[in-house]
Length: 288
Image (cartoon, rainbow, N blue to C red; front, side, top):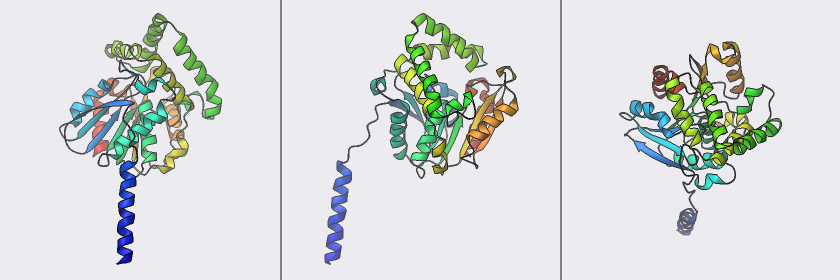
């Protein structure tokens, strides 16, 4: 009886401790939920609006509960706490807490959203059912060479951050117009992409870029238990061979030997906009 009493007292104490622990507030992103069924979280990329997922929401909401996240500071959303300090790490922590409240959600992330999806799956390996990374590497700076390290990338990341912050509005808009011509093959969507960038909080955008260039998530990959699929873009106008694109992604994800890597041809970075049919098919296969 004494043992039972002590156990009961310990259980009550533990419950009180749990109840009084502060919950991680959702301050760095907003969410919009549509549909009913298994949970799917959609995380957009750098400076992007959650509207980049509109076609995917339409595809999935009849059979899934779809959670579209909007990063504060991107695409006209007020910056909130993203206005100071790091962006990606604390954002990933909040999304991890959000995902843990759901029933083993799948998570789909584009660009830095893909990096965040990997970090969430590594942080809560038993909470995420599966991960789809859309044109993202676990270490962004591998684009500059296979031997890149976070330390070596830091000066270039600092230069990129400084440049984003130092340009005038007119210079920034012109630069984004040029950039989006390399981000999407689909001319009709480029003005929207440019508008998302120029309406983003410049400081949040610059810091997120810095974080992505110096955040090497490759050591986290072996911690991920969920099945991981990776879509990556290639087009002959990119100026690199298919073999080089394949090799870059295969090498980057060697820490996840079971990951399914699929190249989507005829696309730049925004695969969901450049190849919507192929992307929808890949998403359906990923969730089945």
